Image (cartoon, rainbow, N blue to C red; front, side):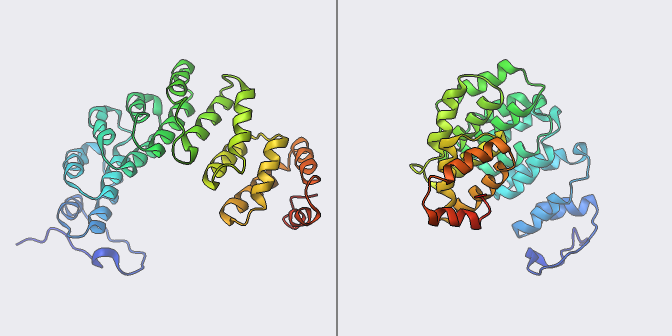
Length: 276
């Protein structure tokens, strides 16, 4: 019998960098017949440069047959930007694994061409999928502002896990300059504070860094986080405060809040190069 494909280091157990060129037929055979998931995945990943029209029928078959989400995620990624496959993209929307959908969303280059698919993903059960779909849609300048306002209105009551959706919602309300900025500012203050667990505070801090905003209350909350015994909370906040310090007006706010702290806390912040 003819050999369909050859594997070197089945299951990729050996750490290595290897170039092993295979024909399209060999890759198709490996993706369909290899015993282990990682070997099937490697074959799919190696088809990156094969034109979509030459691999779509095979990918369609493998997407339906594959049980491991990572392989379906790679297929979704490679097919994401072919707008002629919009009907097939519905399979991504219906996939039970958020990893598949997030891989697809991340790969989309022109959201306006796949607007209907991304809009459907705004209703997904995964908070991360909703956050990422919203970010793609809002970030595309070709999508009309009325549509963007519609998305924000749709998600206005959603918090998500660790307020991830709310943080992204607040970011886009601020950057699009819609609604009452004072209300958004108060929510930044509330969610950045010690009444919330560290992941929510990190989500809000990341948004504040992105939109480049701080006030006295937020500065106090971020200093509190920086002085926390939780390293995963403290370190990112310290870096963001250092970035904020580069703005003269924001640094004045930060230094004013530091001045209200005890001498030992001020010394700790001095050591971190946050206190002037």
